[in-house]
Length: 162
Image (cartoon, one colour):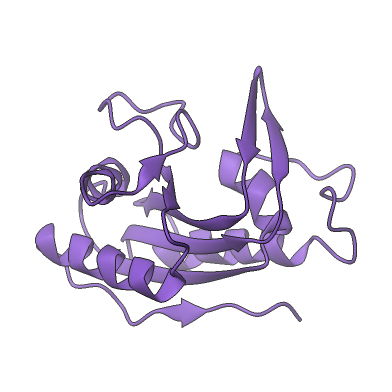
């Protein structure tokens, strides 16, 4: 299935992410990452990739295992997250900027430039901080956001490390 997705992440402590010439300081809290997967494999392949990075952390909470190659900013943050919830929706169009804009208008704060180096829409970034830190509320807001775009979201899927 091709479409858009959101990862609702819980980060338990301050982390610093270096990506190219940028450095992102991520405070503890709940965040929403908005993405699209319209290529081969669609959302399922993208979520499998994200799960691989999430589970890659092993026992080291300070950094990702050396030698891991990253493609997206979120690849660097996922191993440092305590948990995340996935919500996705089938779509023929890119949803990440549209959803990020909806979430921003709803009071979430953009982590400027995170996950949006190829973005030309002006949304500011695809990672948003959730004031109040309520992951369940963030899931509901994401689902409402997909609905407002005219696409039906999935039921949330909570992830676990194995």
